[in-house]
Image 1 (cartoon, rainbow, N blue to C red):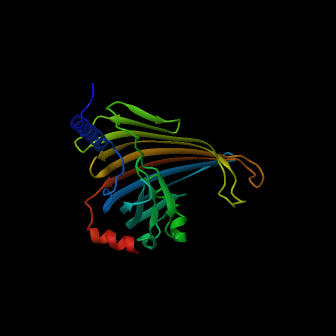
Image 2 (image 1 turned 120 degrees about the vertical axis):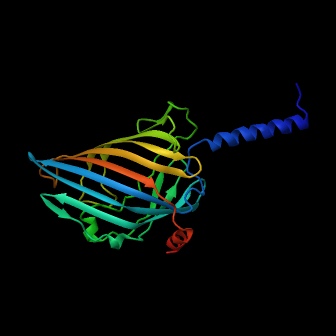
Image 3 (image 1 turned 120 degrees about the horizontal axis):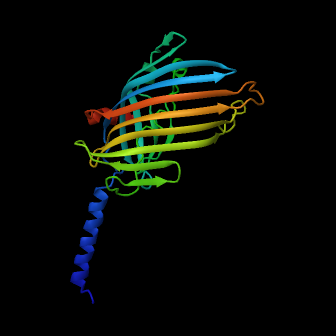
Length: 270
């Protein structure tokens, strides 16, 4: 059977429509989703450290509003700028509570590149005041903040995996949008940062499991996940006794009413 020019054109148009509809149903980060977005974050952590048969523990947390704006970047990535416009940080250890003034963090910018599947690479981090850093490391706050996504449309119940590190399963939709169960695992030795001769290498086992709610037009609406990290530093060199720590963390963000676009324009211009 030979296709005439007219029938071939019609077939091509129909194929393009099918691809477009398929892409429209795929959960992916797109330009326009972060014109100016406000996300409310609540995070709580419990840390237990054991060394030489002695154990100590501490709880900490933060809550605040994070503003995010994005423009089209290199290739398919989005160029992200984000900053806190409200933030509270606290830590309780040995019966003592610390809650430093976090106002020095407000407006400080995180900048990075976000790919359509949610992989984020940080390019710039804000200055973190010493009193805040003593309570919580805020330099990596955006590294795993947004949920990861599958590279194609999933049917309800279907799971997509990337090796042994990432698994994303499509759950039944809610009234708000699509739901995804996201599991991230990282196991192995973590080397010290380049040029750091004081920090020892350590073994780490990380498991991060949560559920994200996704709107096809607006992007992430909610991400509720729990992270457990077990780290061990063996006794060697400058480390006289082995150290084992266990961190359990619960993190939630919810999208709030978008702020005025002028607020994000002013923030990006800083």
